[in-house]
Image (cartoon, rainbow, N blue to C red; front, side):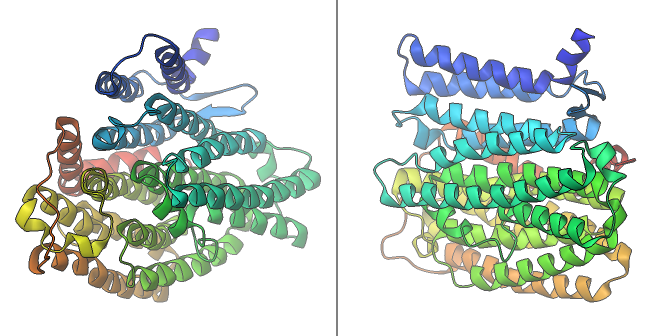
Length: 469
């Protein structure tokens, strides 16, 4: 019995072990940042490998913790993302005095996300959510000498506290009406009565804050701009993916009896999120704010996929998040390197970027094409499956609206590509020297963007894991 629990919680235990190892490194003999970074990247690789073998399906602690192959895959996607972020941030982190503390914050946040994804109980979900959020506020303030970084941390903690309070109120109402926090038992108590609908709306509002869905997105651009690029990438990819995984699971496991209600809510959220995300992305010059509004628009497309049938909606969401990890991190990897080595973060600074840095220019271009959904990149197939899942409810007006907005998104993504390849810059970004780990991470991202969309077995595998959700 005890051995089964260790296997069920293997990913969480390995991550906890990494946290303790970092503590020992911090209090032990002083080592160079390069040595510590190489060691951490090796440990993160083994952390990813540990999640690929021998996982059981089951539950522990009176079903407060649950796991299955789909949940294991979702955690492995997060493990892959944090490994890529670490490799891409090498140039910035090797000069940082608080290197170990940075990883302690990110690993603790990731551990909270793991518990949140595996939660079978609203209490476990809420504890995992708080454990994942609080360290991120400190990480957002990691550029201690920059006022914008402190401002970003303050806005993140205040918005997170507000959204957590809304979530907790919704949870309290649900518990008061049902007398249980367990997902399995709670589902039988869900009915179409006004108080439960109000509790559900509170719960959705709390989730919408975390994934930056409109109109709960106002914190996103400021926090992304003020945070270090590595933290912005973590917020945009890892944090958002974890909340989307959990949100989808709770919708399908708990709130199926009121599916017609939450379908309408998701349609409103998706339409407003895509529209506002696209409109504001059009007028951004700061690259991090640009990617912030881009990520907001991407969430709108994901919500369309989730609104479809359970199996197709879940599979298309996980598939798109996997593609989004490679696409967004490829873009953030280039921005991170330019920010660390040249101190520039505006789109206008990238004019003529191809003349001095052709490799980085192509990495960024392919990433932007994938985010836009240009074939044959994986982003095209990801959005295609999201639209197909959303079309299961025969709401073709929604699909047409989303398709037209994809055309709008082509404009602002191609505007960046135009600046890189076709415009002149009196003071271009100089040729940058790429650390080996950063270059390897970019190759991995480009390979993921090109290969995943062309190998149909990837989506078929995810779809097979989504059976019975």
